[in-house]
Image (spheres, rainbow, N blue to C red):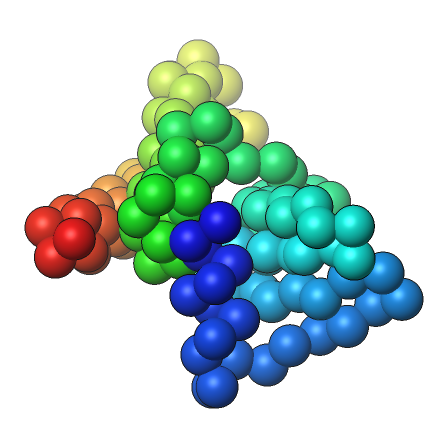
Length: 130
């Protein structure tokens, strides 16, 4: 996998070790190579205590375009998912204004929109350089 080769060869990255694997976390993504050769990539930007598997589209970028492209794709998708949740909350705030702070939700959505745009530009730049 191109992403593992890229991140493990960077001398600035700190490698973590378990009894059965080596792993890195960077840009909200964990990549782990097990002693049996398996490589697993997980999204760490979740609202729970557990990391989530990445999507096939994200995996494709890690495999073919490398670490940064894959990470930026995960970040773009995470921002989009969070924005969808907030947009649903905004719609619900019209029905139950006492449960949701409309102004706070709008500001959060604006921040996510800006962040998603920044990651989209970074992803495009990395892909153009390939």
